[in-house]
Length: 350
Ligand code: SAH
Ligand code: SF4
Image (cartoon, rainbow, N blue to C red; front, side):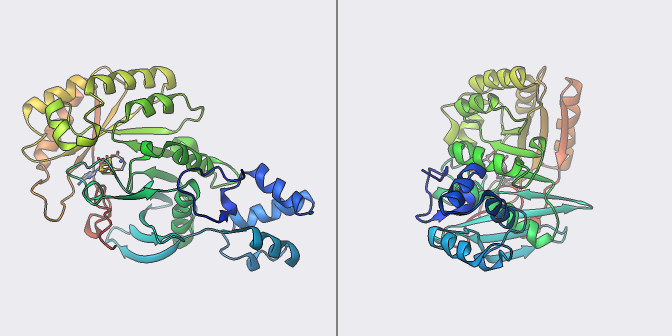
């Protein structure tokens, strides 16, 4: 078995789903010396070619053999929107017609990319456009990698960080997500430092436990949104079965094991999770942990009754958390004017 994308792989072999060793094995099997594999690899990973003909230093006979064996995968862009703040949102399509969204967010000399891990999401969080839009399928590792490549090529610059905060729940697609993180991290891939690769989960407890055991220093963010069980059940019905107690416990273990600082994401929703009782619960949940709290004023969703809290409320939360020793910041969303901000990547183009 050459491909390590086991879940939902397209039928033909995408050469970029091969590891270094697998590609070498293929080229050798086809009767070529190993340096040819390195050349092919450079075209795939450094130059992001979309056709075999562009591999100019690779013999035509080998190009033909490779084309018979597989494809170069890749995405085609279906639509794009450019935000006033310079962010660009892309709707991309894969060979089987599945579509996903990704966003490039430039700041001076850095470029952050927000990647989708699934087309749609099964978790059904009530404040999230993706959650309300249904689910098509999980994405393979190369499909996630291709989003990053697409954005890098468009901005003509290297990507400095990746957040898996687009459509989908990464920990419902664990193996492919890990494979994608490793491709992004690898010097043969995008060469992005593990600490600059962030996974955001709605809190799938067994997978957080597993993630803690991975050797790389990837960054973890957990969507909390309420530390009151009843409120969280309402907002995030898909993670009802993983109670806040279990989440707290597994996060304690995560910090103990990795020594890494996790982030809790908390979208402030007016009259829902921004009252004194909610604030007390949030302080209790995070006090004495290493965690950082990211407060996000809810991004408006079309047709939703949920509205963002006021800035005063957000500032009150920051002060109260600071008074119990918890670091918190108010994150301003990028690309809000193009529906590219967190939770607004829906499949409405479908
Ligand atoms: N499924 C993962 C990652 C994708 S969602 C997760 O839930 O963590 C990325 C982030 O956007 C999550 O923190 C999510 O809770 C948040 N989000 C979703 N809808 C939002 C909205 N309308 N306003 C602000 N943040 C939102
Ligand atoms: Fe899925 Fe995350 Fe949206 Fe919840 S917030 S529906 S887990 S993408």
